[in-house]
Image 1 (tube, rainbow, N blue to C red):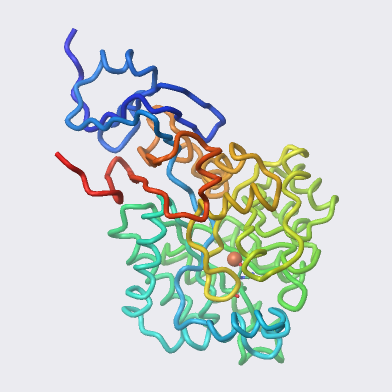
Image 2: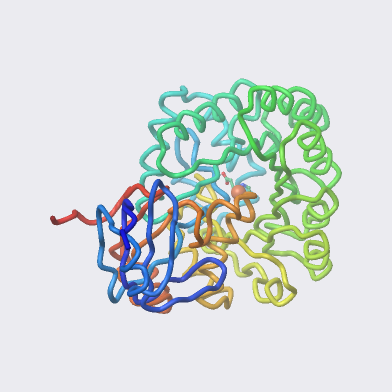
Length: 410
Ligand code: NIG
Ligand code: FE
């Protein structure tokens, strides 16, 4: 029998952990033309393929690439000063109410040109990819006027063009009310719905529309209006919900049929029930809880036990979380939210893919899915989590292309 030529064979992994809880020992993975072509016991796969390149994965762990489904990685300037202030007792919401927080990043982003937004974001995205993220969602929302929101979304499109990871754009004009509309928030919401959303949609610059439904930011009625305007223009709804307080965001998510509700630190039982009933993915961002030194993590166990689909993401942004590593986020999920290592791995891969409507394309190691993979210098998921604070050696493939890893010796 002739052996089928393929691009790459990862052979005899100690463990292959797929996003859908499949756990295989001594398996090999065949990759060709950017896709997974076969997965099976090492001896079986060896008899089928002739690889152009083969890597011995003996003793190692192979999960899918991470799907980081919630980031704000494009912004002008930085807010290190606020972080230090918070460390000596200042409060995130008080800083925001005094004109800092998101509005500080808005002023800096308006003052930053397109090329600089792109060149500032690039190293962040490169670090994310090196740490294993192969799909990355990015939101606008530090412009809060049409011109700057479009500038941010164009920066995302430029970065997406040559990026080996898949970049997914989200419009978030309703991230905050900008300085110039503080006295007339309803007029700002009207602008988001009637001017920004149609412009963004007509240029095809975003796939999702997000809103910050929160005490002191946008209320449930305003949030619903924004998401419905997005839906009317083909933008799928996402929502920042119940981050600082139970603000009704999870109920809005259920009401509009959002693909995901994110944060959910303070979600009450009726919010969990509503998300379950409506099939909304619960995207948990424990890095934000950690970075803001908040005492209460999202009730992950209650959500998993209620049967919700859970995703984990970084929320990388200039103010409330600078963490870029999905492994670090998984470590927090296990240590602070009582998730198991396998649950955390599934949430960081297939969960994220579901939160981005991409579970047929990525997020698990299945035949014909994109070859987004990480070869970890770890025997299993318990060891991986145990080392979550460290820069564990790994090789990352996105769409079958090796995008990061130690030097290859031939
Ligand atoms: O997801 N919650 C709203 N937006 C971001 C914070 C943005 C910022 O502080 O700049 C978040 O945490
Ligand atoms: Fe966010």
